Length: 86
Length: 450
Image 1: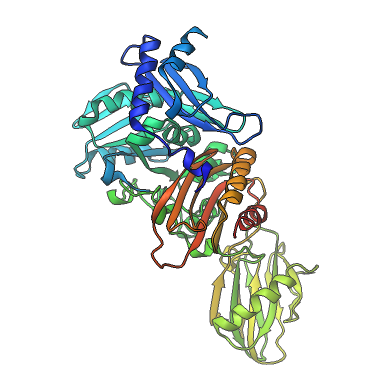
Image 2: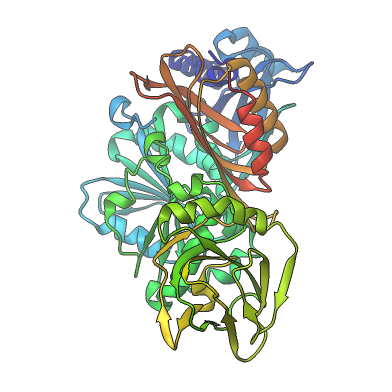
C-alpha cells in the first residue's frame, strides 16, 4: 500500500497523548497551553523521510517549534527532554 | 470519510464570506433554528459569551507557518489554542462553527484541521461554507485573492441576496462560480434562508458525496459553449443578436444528417477542428452560410443582424463560442422565431490561465502505487501552494478496497474505504486551484495507471 498515503494515518492516539504529556512536563507548561504535534513527510533526497514536529502555542503569535527526526511512534521521553536543553 | 457517527468526532463547519455577504445572518439563523444541536461558535469579533445553549468564542487571526524540505503549510495558531481549550469542555456542545472574517484566507483555517494529529482524531471538518453577495461579488471576484479562494475552498456556496439581481445575472454568476469550483453545492438564498440540512452535517469531506459532481464538469473542454440543431427551409433566415459581453463571437454553421442528439454529437469533433482554423470576420448585414468555416461575428454595430443563406432545406447545427443567451441571439425565418430542435451546452475552455479552476479526471483502471506515490509527492511539492483542494476515489492495484483521499494545499489525508465488491473499478479525482494545467495533471495521473 502507499507509503506516502499511509504515513499520515499511522497514528497511535495513546502515543500522541503520551508525547503531549511529556512535552507539558518537560517544558513545565500550564494546562491551558496547547501543544500541536504533527508528522511531516519529505521525499527529497537528504531529508528525513518523516519527522515529528512539535509546536508549543504558549504566547500568541510566537509558537515555539521543535522537530524530531523520527516518526511519532518512535519518539521517546528522552527525545523530548533533549529539546529543553537544545 | 464521514465517520462522525462512528467515532464521536465533532463536526466542524467553517463559514467564510465577504463583509456584508450575509454570513452573520446565516450564523444567527443557525443559532436560532430548532435543529437540536448545541453549537460552539468561534468567531473574530466577539469575546466569549453564552448564547442560550451555545458557546461563542473570539479568535484573533494568527497565522503560523510550518515547513520542511517538502512541505510548507500555514495554520491558524489562534484556532489551535481555542479548539484545544474547547475540547476540554467537550460535553457542552456537539457541533462547532468557525466564522472567519470577511478577508480571511480559508487556507490556513482548513489546514489547521489536517495538521494537528489530535485535532484530526477528535474533529471532523464537515464543510467549508461560503456566503456570496450575489449583487456585489463581481466587485471582488476578479481582483481579490480572498474572494476567489473563499469560493475555491467551499464545499457549500450560498448565493445570497438573490432578490437584488435578475435571474440572468444569477445564472451568469453561478456559471462563473461553477467554472472555478465544480465540486461545490450551490444554493440560491434570500436573507440567508436555507434548510439546515444543507449547511450542517453535509459531509462535504465525505468523498462519495463530494464526488457527486456536475457531469458536464467531467467532460473535456470545448472551444464553444453551445450548439443547436435547426430544421431550416430554403427561405431567408436571419440571426439577430444584442450587444453582449464581447465585441465578437465565433460561430460555425454546418449541415447535419438529422435533427437529433446523435447527429449533433457526431458533428462535435469535426467542429472542434473548425474552431482551430483561421476565422473569417463577418460584419452585421453580412451573410452566414453553412460552409463549415469558422466565422467571427463582429458585434460592434448598432443593428446586429446577419442573413443566413440556406440553399437546401434540412438540419443544420449552429455552434457558438458563447451561450446565445449572453447575446440574446435568436434565429428568424420569414419573420418568425425558429427554435432549435435539439441543443446542448458545453464546458468552455477559455478561462484565463491565472484563474481559479477545477480539473476533474475520471478514468477506469488500476493504479501502480509506487508511480502514484512519486507523482503525487512531486505534484504537492511543486504545485501544492496552487492546489487549494483536492479529493478523489482511487483504485489501487491488487487492493480490494477503494482508496479515498483529500487534501488542502500540501496536506494530504487518505485511507482505504469500503470494498469495491464487484463494482467496476475506476478513479475519480478533482483538483481545485490556481494555474492548474489540465493536460499535465491528466497525463501525469494516467501515467500512474498499470
